Length: 130
Image (cartoon, rainbow, N blue to C red; front, side, top):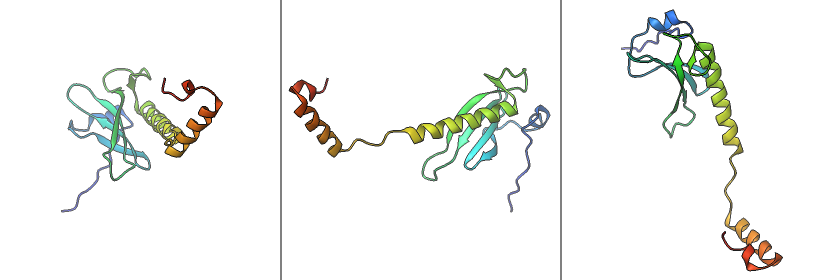
């Protein structure tokens, strides 16, 4: 039997109200390997971000905030669709920038050169661990 995908409407409250409560969120892609999720439950509905960049690791899921299904959005903790999408994009961009800025590993050769350089400068107190 063929699996059919249904188009889900997460952009409006009315569209989200038609969806059934379930354990797995409703996902909609917004970039390659990135999805905005809508988690509908009996107690509280939430917006989620899922990043699926690596086939080797489990996807990373982040809670963005509550939905505006029952209360007015404030832009911080309660988000409408557009705010949740902007928050997901900002979070994804920030994560990519952090990943790009991570320092490379310090090699043994660099450590030895640094030790010798400091040893030549003066007393052994410069070469000891603080």
